[in-house]
Image 1 (tube, rainbow, N blue to C red):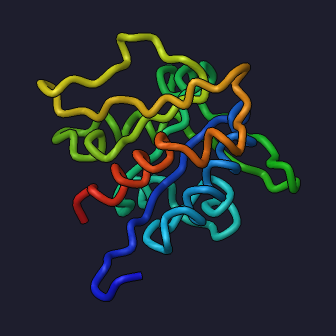
Image 2: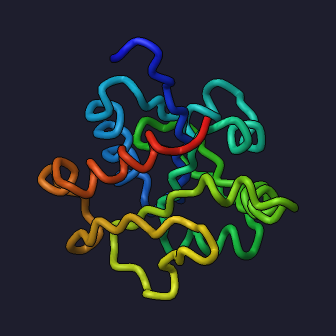
Image 3: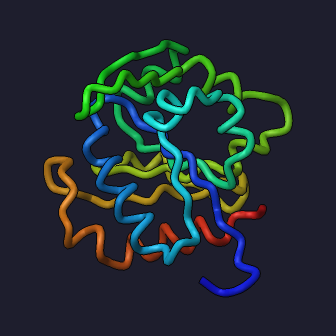
Length: 167
């Protein structure tokens, strides 16, 4: 890593149905970013007894793995507790996420990078007018992450977006 390079803290949010894909994404983000990206996810929040609200605020970017269940949890401000592959209890708190994204100035929304492992509806694409980021869509067959997909231009683009986020 170059001297003076700022490490970008990324909060990885996902619901139970995308936990395996999120784990793969985290592994590749950390290994392909040359030490510039530090990923914190829901497991880290549970194990280290961190505050989701504080992590949302202090992270440079928020990679939100889109899925029907994640959208529903945020929209309805519900909480889902599930166990990860190692048996660790994980909490996806749609209420905290919704409240933080809805808060006043919209600064947190500017940090969100929507990522999908399935094709997204066109209405979710960002526009230059609202200054939101377009979703990063991996277009994975049947929603499964493959090593080939994670080694391509899309991953390079995702890392470039993260690196370009303000400190």
